Amino acid sequence: MNVFPGTSIIASQRMILDMPVCDFGWADAFAFADEIASLSIGQTVISFLNANNANLMMNDREYRAVLNRHIVLPDGHGLDIASWLFHGRIFPANLNGTDFVPALMTYMTTPRRVAMIGARPEILKRAAENFQRHSPWHEFIPVSDGFLDVAQSDEVMARVRELKPDILLIAMGSPKQEKWIDRHVGPGHARLVISVGALFDFIAEEVPRASPTVRRLRLEWLHRLVLEPRRLWRRYLLGNPLFLYYVVRHKLGGRAKTLEVGGHRAESRSF
Image (cartoon, rainbow, N blue to C red; front, side, top):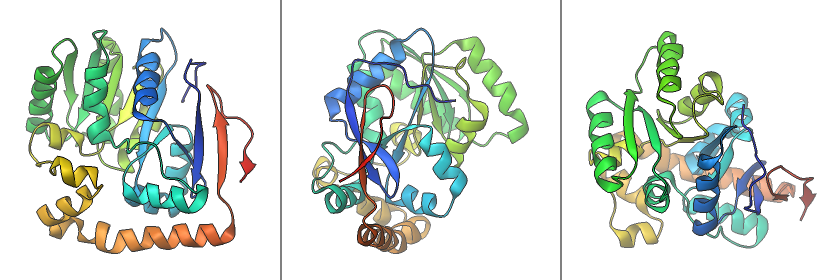
C-alpha cells in the first residue's frame, strides 16, 4: 500500500531492532511531508516508533510487517539510547507525533484539507476546532471517532474518499491504528497518512502537555506517568526496562545496520 515517490529529500534510515527508522532533522522532515502532501498521486504513511511501540513490535509479527511498509520516525529518549548504542550517535530530532504534526501544519503554507479519525467524539470535535484555530488556512474535518465498529470501516473510508483530503490523521493507539491503516486506507484516500496515537487528546487539551523544559529533556513519559499512573505504570515502569533489554540483546548480537535511502530503500550494509 505504501508508495515511496521520488522526492527531493535524501535521508538515511538507522536500523533499530531490525526496523528502519528515518534520521531526518526537523527541517527535512517537514519538507519531506510537505512534498508528499503536494503530490498528485500516490500515498505515503508516516508512523512513529518509541520504546512502547518497539516492545509491541518485538512480539507482534503483523505489526512489524505493517511498520515496514511505513515511513517510521523516532519518538522519545529510548530511541536515542538505542541509536547511540547501535550507531554511535543519537537521532537528529525527536520527531514525536505530538510535536511533529502541529508544527507540520504551521510549516505548510499551502492550504490543505485534513481529515481526522480517532479518539472519542467530543475530543475529536474539540481537537478539530483547536487545530483550526492553530492553523486557520487549513481545513480540519472530523470524520469518525476511533471506536467505530470494524464493519463500519469501509463506510467511513468511503466518506474520506468523497472529502478528497490531502492529509489523513488516524488516532486509535498502537498497534490498532497502524493495522487499521494497512487494512482500510488506500492511495485514493489521501496522499499523506499519519498515525498519531494520543495526539487528539493533547490538541483537545483533554491531557495536559509537560512543560517545555521537561519535553526538552525528553522526560514527558514521566509527566504522563504521574498524571495517569494506573493506566501507564506497566508501559513505563516495566516497558522501559524491557525495551533496554531488547536493545542490549540486539547490540550483543551485532545486528544493527544503516540504510541509505532517497525515494526508495537501498541495499543495507553492516556498520
